[in-house]
Length: 290
Image (cartoon, rainbow, N blue to C red; front, side, top):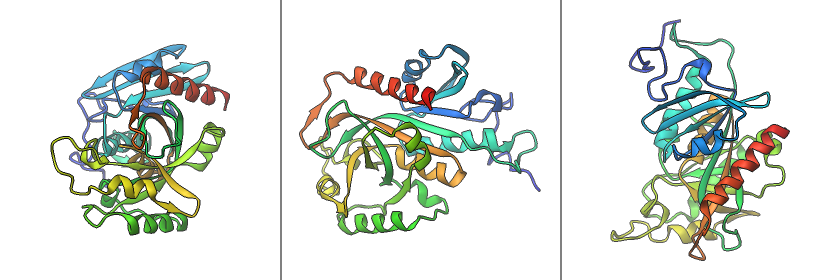
């Protein structure tokens, strides 16, 4: 089998993957992703010991243990373009022989747990609450660059959503699901919902400052969408990419959303850091108990 070209799998001089600056032994089987590089330390401060600290660009990684549970926490930065880098390089670290540039015959499945902030688009979803994404609809284009097959439930939901999306919206959405096993394991008592992942924070999420919106009816279409008992609960910028790539690569993924804003009531959290801290404690507690 021919090796993967140097221009497709770029390695640093020490053999680490190009953007994350990590070696295979640096990565635990359970990986927590956060958007903000400063939030990595807010997770790793709960570790009993930290064995590794590395950083490059916006990608900061700490690996350590809580008891016997080995964990890696890594910052992704914002958006699914960064998720494309993080998920592919994490997978390369565990499923590609970097020295020989060949795919391993026996594959490793990572548990990938996002802890991120989000805005609710339903009035009844409380500020500072935590919501887990069962599915995510991407309004970006990332997964259109990969061969993706949806199951029947995903196809039906995506078709229904496309039917109500304003005609002026420039991109065709995609859909991906979180790991049902991981959701059942780590979020049994956490409220669930369907998440929208947008390719930006302002116009792509219906915010208007000085520029005119191409799709002024976007938030209303998303907020009023119903398919059976399903509704869309929140907006953020990474989950659909994480779910889509994790599923294709054979990893398990779950996304915890800290609701800091409610776009319908127009309210924003008065204690965002406390809400994020509570989410971190919830996730780590459930991980250790599982």
